[in-house]
Length: 278
Image 1 (cartoon, rainbow, N blue to C red):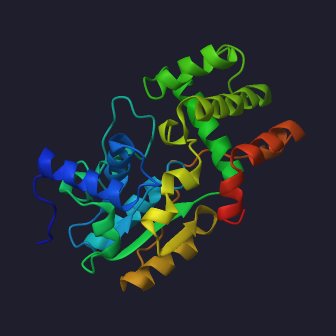
Image 2: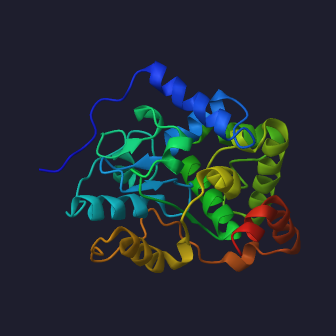
């Protein structure tokens, strides 16, 4: 019999984890909201063998499935149909909400505890070429409109208000992508990076490397190398084949590589390009 998590802790212990995280890393977390949102997204197994900080649009669906298979040594074959989520690999994102995996916040674990206590294993994350990730996020937003989904509906509405985006004309066009980048920049300037949608939030803000202190930062472009490295670190057997799930079709990148768009991407994600070596 394998072990899974029990019931989450109450609000008092959660608040304590949030407070401790802010006190330990005041430069990374300015308030309770940013700390609580971050801890909510930190995922770990009941064994505490690893601690994973997902970053949206960096192969998270594939990595969660991979982590299930090395942790429980069985194939991940569960299927369901989500009501609003347009991610075709939605199932792997249910692992934390089902208590198969756990979220740091829900079990009262502060970031200082996760980074200093010897009972917690390897901390890791996966990043992606910022340019490819921006295109993937943009196309994901367009798909949500095509399906008339409630997924990302508020983002689509704000994009129209801020940039005059016409959903009858601009989806999946170079001009539309240009407007999308303007929108991301406007959101960062208006509400700050911590409050921008995580699908296009700069990766260095999502990761907060100075606080999380990951032992391994892999690249989506080298996902097989990353998974082998992680199996070696955890002393686990490599599962047979790691599919790239929820993969956005990425042909015709060149049509988006206009001078204006390339400069916007470089300016918008400057720290990502530099910090992660792209």
